[in-house]
Image (cartoon, rainbow, N blue to C red; front, side):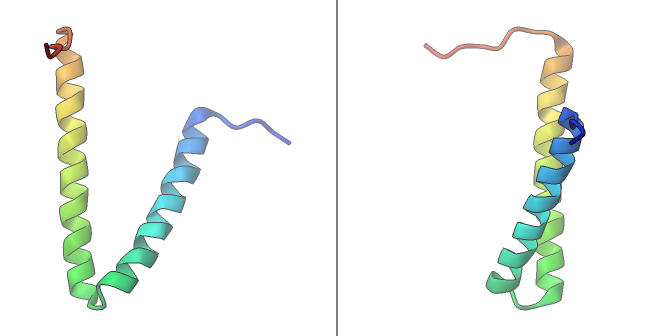
Amino acid sequence: MASRSCSEFGTVRRKAIEKLELALSQIAVSSLAWREAFACLGAFCVGGTTWTRLTVLARGEPPVRAG
């Protein structure tokens, strides 16, 4: 059995999560238009969070600790 790299595991995990999300969305929201709208909103939120985290890391400033 060939070994897999971390990126391949990430891809497999991402595809599994996408299939799970699609299945759950079909249960919760019957309209295709609403499913697409919620998917776009979710993608926007995830992308915004990722962009924010990468921007903070790119600055090189140490994180601020509470307390």
